[in-house]
Length: 401
Image (tube, rainbow, N blue to C red; front, side, top):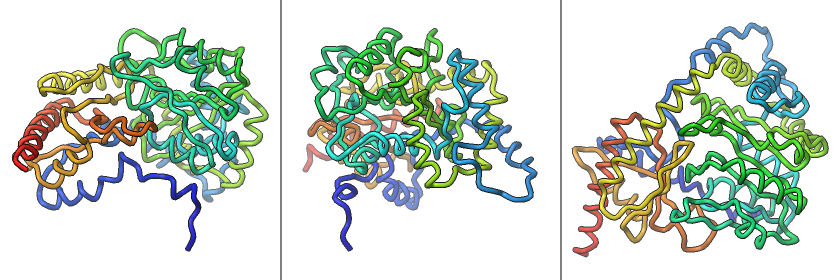
C-alpha cells in the first residue's frame, strides 16, 4: 500500500509516543509520575456529569453541524461576559481545539504555504499543518529573552509570499508566556498590514498568574476579519475527554468555508456539548480563581524542586501549566529511556516530554524537556526529586561507559 508523502512527513507525538515504555515500567511494579501530558488530575465539575445524566431525549439525534444550540448560546454568553460580544454565527462547535485547527488549516493552506509560529510550540501544530501541505516557519525565541517574540524585528523578516497565517498561544504551551496588551496589538497590526490570518489558541485563557485579567484577540474589533480564536473546554474545566472545542471568528467568508467541513463530518457529539454547556453556565469567578490558585501552588512546587537540581535552567511561567527546562545532559530522549527502563528510586520514576519535538529548527531542544505540572504539589515535589536523582544516575552511567 502506498501512503501520502504528507502523512509520511509527520512524526509521532513527542508527548504520547513514550507510553509503551511507561506501561512496561508500571508492569515492573514501578510508580511513574506523569509530567508528559497536559492531563490535570483536578476533578471535572459535577455539573457536566449531571447534565449528561439528565439528558431526556428519547433519540440521540445528529446535532446541528454548527453545534447544539444550548452549547453555542452558552459560549456566546461566556465571551460576552468577558467583554467580547459575539453572535451565534461567529461560533462553530468542534471536536476539541484540535479539530478547530485542522478545519482552519484546511481552509487556509495550499501546498507550500507557511504558518509563522513562535518556537518552542505545541507539537501537534506541526502535524495539522503538514497534512494540509503547509509548513511551519518558526519565530525564534529563547529562555534568555523570556521566550518573547511579538516584535516587528522578529516577525516581519519572516513574512514572504508563502505566509498565510500567524499562530499564537497565550498563555503559552509549552513556555507559559502570556502576551501583553501591547504585544497583542502589534500582532493584530501585522496581520492587517500583511493580510494574514491571526490564529489565537486561547485554551488556557483563565490560567494567568498575577493580576492580569483574561483577555482575547477578539478584543481588537478593528481586525475582526483577520482574527480566529481556537478554544476548548479541555483545560478550562479539566474535561479533556469530552473533546468539545470551538472555532470563533467574525469573518463570515471563513466561517462559511469552515461550515463545509463541519457539515462533511456531520456534527460533534451531542452529549458532550450538553455537558459543556452546563460547565459554561454554572462556573463562577470563584471557580476560576480557585483553579488559578491551585495551579500556582503546583508551579511553585516544580520551581522549588528544579532549583535544587544542579545545572538546570528555566524561566518561571506566567500562565498555563507547563514550563520548558534545559537539562545538564546530552540528550533528553536518551535520559527519558533511561528513567523508564533502568532507573528507579524506591520503585518510583518520572516521565516528561522531550523538547526536540517542540521545535521546527533542526538541532534545537535536544537537551530540553517540557514539564506539565498537572498533579498534586506533593507529588510534583517528589517528581522533581526523582528527576534530580535520575539525572545524577544517568551522568554516572555515561562516565562509566
